[in-house]
Each structure stands twice: as C-alpha cells, then as structure tokens.
Image 1 (cartoon, one colour):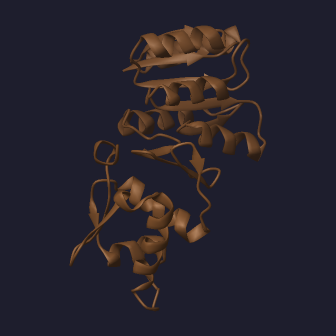
Image 2 (spheres, helix red, strand yellow):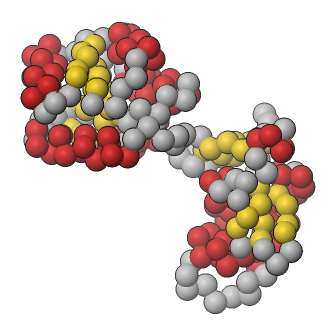
Length: 223
C-alpha cells in the first residue's frame, strides 16, 4: 500500500510517516498544499491523508481539484477544526472520511484500512450524464449551462436516474427509492413525475421501455 501524507506540522508528519511505515505502507510526505497537490497528481496512491489547513493551498481546494480532475484516490481529511460546517464542506468537496486532531492512532489506521478496501472507484461530488449535471450537496441541477428549476421530488428522481444512467429501472424500484417502501398511493405518480422531468431535461434524455421501466441516456447517447 502506498500513502501520501499532506501535513504542514513536521513532527506530526514524521510521526504519521513512521507509524504508517510500521504498518507496511510506503509513504510520501508533503509539507505544503502545492507539493501535496503535485504528488497526488503525479503518483498513484492507495490513500491520501490530507490536512485541512495548509500553506499555499488548503485541503478543501486540493480535494476539489483532484476530484474535478477525476483522481479518485480515497482521501482522509485531518484537521484540528471541529465545526460541523467544516466537516460537511470536506465531505461535500469529495473527501471520503474526516478525523479531528488529536486522534487515536488505532482509529486512524482502522479508517485507512476501510478506505483502502473501498478503493479508488469513481465517486464524483457532481453527478453527470451527457448534458445533465446535478450537485446533491447544493440541490442544484443543470442542462448544459442552464440551471434547471426542479422541485425536491424531481431533483431526487433525477439524481436516482443519473446514478443508474444507462440502466433500465422499474416503476417499483423508483417508488422504493425516490418515495419509500411504505408508499401506498397511486403508482402512476411515477409516470407523472417522469413527464414533468422530461419537459425540463429534454425528451431524448429519458426513454420509456414498455413493461420494463425507464432509462436515462448515457453521455454518448445524449451527446
């Protein structure tokens, strides 16, 4: 396993390097945000430990930049700041986990193991399908450069379809995920919302397969 530690406190950075090497990791250390971003861009890592408050470029910007460049290495954010807003921003920016200082070393290692098991699968903060984009954190969606005006339910339906783009999803599946398992109203509510959504995202982007369900076009098909 190869890890990148981006931490501007030399003693902590050295301690993390020594501890991780004792666990069998190969470790690179960066003491500034600029160096950390360069390392993360130029080398492949199994996990990145990223301090939030860094000189030159902070952890938020590093994380956002990597995700925008489709670098999906798992990121564990380290910081002395405990504010809920910082944790929310870190996770919404694309971090996979968040640990406040001082932290338990055994907990740190356990979380790293969990992140390494998860691997570097694609998990963008902003979802995309062809000309459509959706940001779950801000509850905003766009078709091309035009922002869509969607109700909360329409936004949930679009997010569900984007996450399963290219797949055929049944009416029952949509009800279970966009409404809930206890929904006992008219199942045709799905058709109503699909029609509404089509008028906003484009008829060609959502197809109906009779007797099977609905399918959101992939990037190639809608492009």
